[in-house]
Length: 323
Image (cartoon, rainbow, N blue to C red; front, side, top):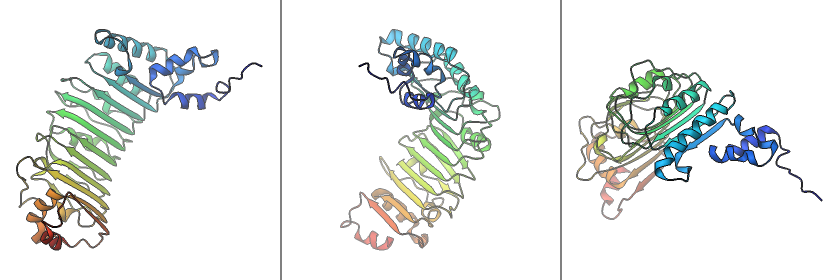
């Protein structure tokens, strides 16, 4: 009795959903399974292009990867993209055409990771899309920032940046061009940020283990969740606007030498006074409460407080003062 190919009898939409969990190279290779699968990959709405998946010598990996991506995008149909994920370890002009392709195909999610020491200016068209809802950029060094053209990302709700840029206005440009932004994550960015102002922002996470990042003022009145993790020095003179909607705050700051909080400017505890859940690390507690305890407000809404890496025996007096 002949075996029945039950998988190939599934509708195209379901087969494409299954294929979307594969990287694009394996998805294309599925064309050899049967005639039913021959051209199915050309309608993929999620492209996962990862140079590290190419098992070949380092000298040929970049060349083969470029040829594969160029051919894939040339033969793919004109349907819109849901997600475009690109990771590569070289600087090539082809990258610009690939990103442009994703923008023209109305991609809703774009994730770019370029593992090179230096990269040129990001293309202006990357920041002009009526369909983009999530943008994730991980680029080591952007010499000239994001250009001078206006940014227009009206539907962008989630933004993650891990970049090194000499453009001190990079976030201000994004704030003006992303009116719907709700979720911002800055991870190990090396940049000088004077003011961060996002009126509709609900989730803010800043993770920095580099002393080259500096943030002076954060304005996010509708913030629901705040996470600050990393070295204390980048937050030394940080100032916050009051956040009446804030429900959860996690503050875990460390220092290689001594804390550099400015007693005149630091208002971190006052800004998060409306939280329901507060998560603090030990050294953060010591530094902040030494500065802010005399003027610290009452946390009327607080229901849960987590004190991590904190010795209750050595600092029982400080615990009493906090309570």
